[in-house]
Length: 324
Ligand SMILES: NC(=O)c1ccc[n+]([C@@H]2O[C@H](COP(=O)([O-])OP(=O)(O)OC[C@H]3O[C@@H](n4cnc5c(N)ncnc54)[C@H](O)[C@@H]3O)[C@@H](O)[C@H]2O)c1
Image 1 (spheres, helix red, strand yellow):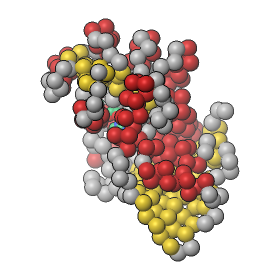
Image 2 (cartoon, rainbow, N blue to C red):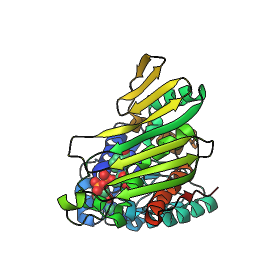
Image 3 (cartoon, helix red, strand yellow):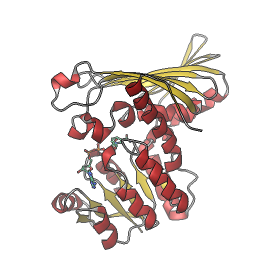
Image 4 (cartoon, rainbow, N blue to C red):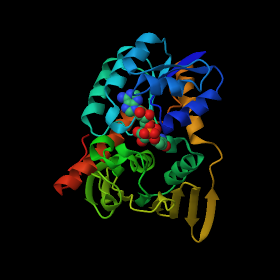
């Protein structure tokens, strides 16, 4: 029986915990929150779980086989380092941090001491994405456009640049990762961000609420990803369009749509990608075979490089080249 710890007592800890509770050979043994009372209250919903007020106490107090890290972007660093030092595999939610320095340090520690890692880029586990990759292999891709057009999440940390990193780093990162996964590595980015209306609706908003990022890919493909969080709750448009030599591939939350010479074909997802992501990670912890994990820390770092470079470009007004 694998003994799992979870850091974070918010929305996404709950999503992972619910999946873990349905899996055989797994139990949630410990919950870490920002204080003891919160962690204990959260832990009470699981049969064997104990609550802890910080990660070091949890790791000293329990023998854990793996840990899930589901904290806001600003809270990364010490938790991952503790887990690497103790050789404990971890699944960490995206994004890796608000910046590049923290993930760079974590990656350097992983290079000294390898542990199994998985990062929550769940789009990669969708059937429709597997189909998309297959279709793209058969055609010459020209360009990709798309975006994450949404309302603003209500958690306070999200609207603060220092604690979330802003929409492109926090949320649109899923599309950047999907672009990398399907269309290749990014060579250069140029971004323009703006502040239109969200700061008049909510207090203490320091994140931009509109932005567009042009990406030059190493293979010559040109991409553009935009995002906004100005929309009212309930209005949302998230997806990518791939323009290639035989037509258009459109992927969004509903699935993949192929248009080729006037004929439309649609694939919908039948498997929950979060379940597949969790199964791949737990399988790796149980067997040592990490081949089913589609995003590990090293790969996710490259996505973080792109999203952080976009912020730098928006701040300087200049294109930013991504390191080799
Ligand atoms: N993959 C996905 O589809 C997906 C979806 C939603 C959220 N997420 C990611 O999951 C992460 C968490 O998001 P959420 O929606 O659960 O946020 P949330 O605000 O609901 O929960 C975050 C939790 O982390 C706790 N926390 C903060 N610092 C901590 C620390 N140092 N130690 C222990 N706990 C700490 C907070 O108290 C809170 O309980 C974010 O990075 C978000 O981007 C991913």
